[in-house]
Image (cartoon, rainbow, N blue to C red; front, side, top):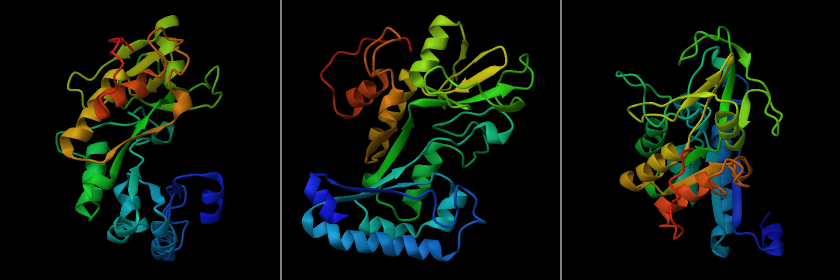
Length: 273
């Protein structure tokens, strides 16, 4: 791996194992030895890469259940340069009811574990340096087919995945540019959270999608700065409105993150997306 990096001029390696012990989020599938094995792999890579000033990062789970069984957080923190927490896919069609793909805060007064704020702080509580922890931002939405079009709020019953998008062609999933096109061209109804704990959701007849818009991406980037975390990462670049088809600018989500975290010099067009 190091030879390959040096030959082609890369900066390092990002590990993406989903997940040690909890294969595809099923913690009955993997052996208990995965937790120690992943730590050993990270140690070995770090030993080879640090002397060459190469970056070693890993994409990790936001789920408390997975974190507890998959990761020795203190060991990973000692040997990883960046810990990318995949703070999205908290809810999807598999829940059999509608839910938001990536809440920033709990929607319940009593609190729950399915939100970015809990996930990042739980990693920090277990020994991860906050400056190494990176917030994951979804540039897509989780989609659902409603059991009844009349019941179209949060926690509404669903039949399964939403219909595939015109361009991404995957059921249960829409890119941000597909979502904003539907809102602008097909009059999907958008519902915002007045408390800004999560991004919006939108629906039309029996189709329903939850996602982060420009406003919520800005709030999350500000959250990173205010709480001393290391930064933000996105999934994925090609899911943003890269061509500007929604009439705002090219890459409105990505540029919004940069305006906050890097004081991006291009003026904010104040998009309504």
